[in-house]
Image 1: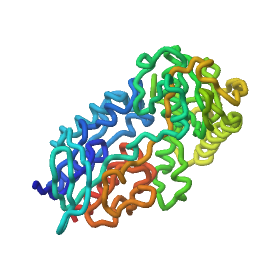
Image 2 (image 1 turned 90 degrees about the horizontal axis):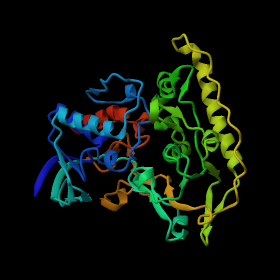
Image 3 (image 1 turned 45 degrees about the vertical axis):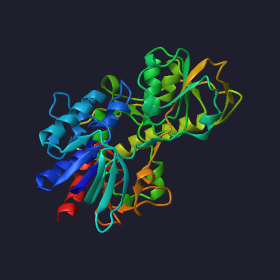
Image 4 (image 1 turned 120 degrees about the vertical axis):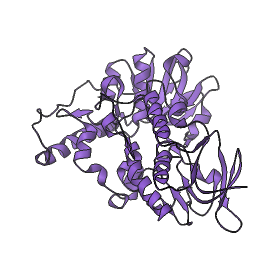
Length: 405
């Protein structure tokens, strides 16, 4: 049986960042990837997908964006090319098409990895499979009619691949609103079920949303600075990088022909039961927008100017009151896209005492209680920026230092 000093599981941005730093330290390791390098970016993003963050905010250890559009936004294929180029730049020892089916303690010392390509023994394992693992679908999905196509946002590709008819998108995080926007631009009839969301300006006083947060030290906050409940409930900003980037406004969506609905509470006989809290949800989004503007204004003296005048919030009419029910057949809905997030699936294959009762990793800055087991690429692994590609530099650096000290 092959023995390797360190096995990195996952060849996304976090796993590659660890590999780069281990390579620099001369540490023996391999990277196992179930598909191809950057597989989730390839196969679990839609055709018009772009990063939320500008190109200038995308970097990895020893690898910076060097294109001519620092304020633009990478497309899905550009992200894949960026990561492929990174892997090639240092000869990352990636073994593609190798899925880790089980990680357990070995008899004696180290860890046993049962994979689709055989078994490995390792002294240390870095788990870099990211936070977006298994699609999360609500129970109500099982109550919808059989003739309605249902797919998770990770399986959505383009409007043209869906059957004719109206589309219902459930979820108003960044993915849900971007997909609804994509469908509406294609001329599809779109219903959008509105839940918790965070509306913010794409640009304010001439600077990108993320530029303000970066310069204001927002991403320096650590997990210890923010209560656990607040970390769990944090919603991604409703923005898009499509067509140069703009903020996503639910009222604008309705004014352009989309139909806003309340949250889906249940389903019976082909009818959805809907919450009547749309007005409150819209007001919540307005408060988030105004809070961000106030946050910038309160810190303006700390930034180098000059600045354009404050950017006014665009005003669109309030949408009609949504119905309490939606008959899917009467509304012509042929497809439901569940933009309802993800859950981790570590407990499916990690057979070590490093997970809590909910199957989530227990660690301190990536180091688990079992000596030699580490995590990277998780939300709030250490700082808020751990969720972004650029956050991997610090986190991977810490883990690589622990591995090679």
